[in-house]
Length: 411
Ligand SMILES: O=C(O)/C=C/C(=O)CC(=O)CC(=O)O
Ligand SMILES: [Ca+2]
Ligand SMILES: [Mg+2]
Image (cartoon, rainbow, N blue to C red; front, side, top):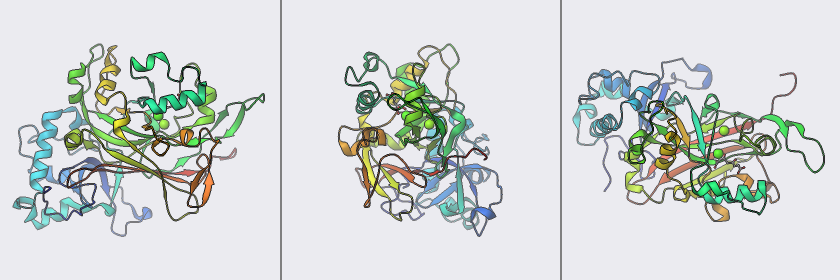
């Protein structure tokens, strides 16, 4: 039997009492459509079933009474950075307090109607925001299947996996300013595309817009410049995980990335899911967290599942990635985002991007009767993921984004 909350949680919910993922939200006004949003202060919350528990209200009511959180202002902030900086003992205290407050047999919140009304808001009545201020974003390259397929497509059959790959987790520095929250629309980027045959490079809207199915670690306490984080301590520097879509323009990327790596082909937008699932919640599922990606094509009502992958396909672990990131003395800071890299599995139906699924546009993808290769304007990519196994799920919610047409010359 799973844990029982006084808040109704359906059996297939991503957010049972065992999960308690952290995010940042602001309430919408009654009426609720986008035009009637009152700009309320963003504040931290956790998800429980279809509700959000406002941690600023719980904190102001004096219900965080443990030694680390009693006097802290970390839940009266517009981001989770301060809370993340405080480290694992504080995170565990927060989780224990929240799980107790929300449990079916604990009266302090359950029987306090006015506090319940103030602190428990239906998810539909809130707007989710970026949970942390992201100072830096790094993206690793850690699925062997993805690495091999990219090597075959971009570099040919000789040595598709380069010799360094098995010795260290390869990565590139991404662009933090264009990391956006699920639901944000993504404008098709323009740029210089790889020459086709003997023609010169072309300029215009990308013809090869792609998604990348990834997860990302959110850094807790950082390290000082010049000091590394040992692999045995790396776990305590990771607060939790989110879903991530590293949108990629394959024609721009293929032309620009030699020899310094991805630049404008990836810096036009990266989407993350709003709820950070803690490593504590994930612990019982150390293996086998399955994931799915769907595409809802422009003009269609239904989304089609196009791939299902699994976190276990990563060759390098998130603690190895974090330790490697600091091995030269590079400093990480609370809120930094470390993408795992595209999570492709060995089978055709577990590939993590359209570059691989369509083999660079050679094969068509069939979606509810229509067919295409790369993403079209109006397409929506919806990534979801959860851990399954026991009598509850630990879910990540969704990481979604819809493609808008490219800007034109006079915009
Ligand atoms: O192999 C290449 O040239 C390019 C690979 C990628 O674009 C993948 C990347 O962003 C890292 C990853 O997601 O695994
Ligand atoms: Ca990537
Ligand atoms: Mg990106």
